[in-house]
Image (cartoon, one colour):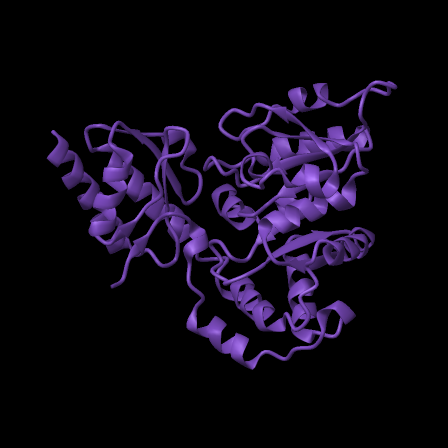
Length: 341
């Protein structure tokens, strides 16, 4: 049975061309630097975000935590959004791997206030940790994007205090689509950037960490320390190459489908859609329903959804969800709420 899976864009399946590229990939031992397919992917990735070099890593969490490890010293403090992926969904890895503590700011639906970020930078004092890094997330997991002017201001703040900026750009190409700019225009305001190949870009495995050549050289050793030396990794890097060549430009289709989905859900009595968080391919809404029953009902209709988190449901469009699927999801949710009335 074919399921419509709107739990996340991580559920996307590799394309036939990706599978063919993986089968035919030329490989070598990447820890020795001998894998030509990985080297090609890393060069492409660096160019895509306007950086000197890039490194292939197993996952987005791995890439973010490797960035923290590479930028900071043990005992440093990292300034980060309280609702960021690094805080909420990386299992406390920053404490375990980089040995840093996190100092949070509260963004407004993912939109940071540069003045608040600057106010959190520590002064020189024997009692204080050193502020070692500022982390941003664009596109944000709350379904929004940060405008370029805010990115620029925060980058200037970092430069004035000699503090690097790391961008969790897991969905940077979604952000670029929403802002109608090239991803390089976003990444220029960060010293390092991580982006995922395995979300909307549909590759089965992998993310990229990009920055200066010296940063990536240091990160390469950190990747080895973290267990990320993947040997004949060209087999999976090949899918990443196809992702960058063919899947970036189609992401706007997912955004369009998300807006259609949001409009359909909004018309259903009992659902409150967060219309101010519709920048990318995510639809957030509240509904007073029995969560287990709702998830079970949707599954019986051939639709996979996640249970609510913090009182919110999230539906995520992706390349394996068609426009007809969107209308079927709306119809299914509508019938469920009619049943409750």
